[in-house]
Image (cartoon, rainbow, N blue to C red):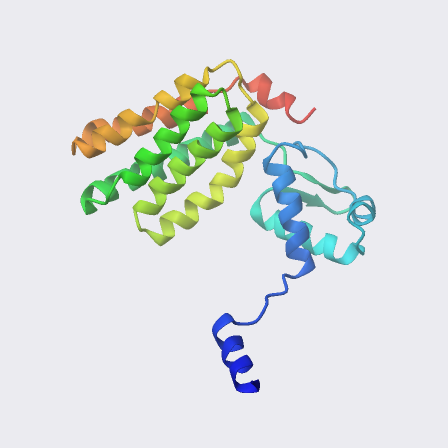
Length: 228
């Protein structure tokens, strides 16, 4: 009996205890990228510790993690706050996204990877647009681009894209542009996959570039208002 229990333990492995600082960092990160904690919001350790029912030490460690992520700024004698966004930073973030996703398209075309998962994401976007389900469409949109990067099978590219996508997610949440019909958002993606399927490298690259550049267009006044 004891041997059987030991064998099961070896198969299942130990239960991981996630450090408290990482749990808190995840909560704060999600609040920042979802727009719940807006740029410029002051992070008060004592208030956060009281809200989360923890001591100040893991709060401080979690904030240090988010500072390394580029989501929080700190200054001696001034405190800690969610890092503000500038129009230039928004533009540069989308420019890097364009570079990464163009590279992904080229790598996928070179490898001849199966595009089925991209078509599935397109179908989910279309269904969400018909149902007027914005959260599901946004999730499917993110899945499309995450799948695009994954299919490239380039580890450094994936890590770099993940780093900037934290900021992309935050920008998307803050802009919350409901003027764009969901059907238009969904319609942007199938032509990209179709061009890749047709092995039309030039068209596929042009379409993914146009898609990311279109998203980068923001009124500087609107960006400034996010921190007010």
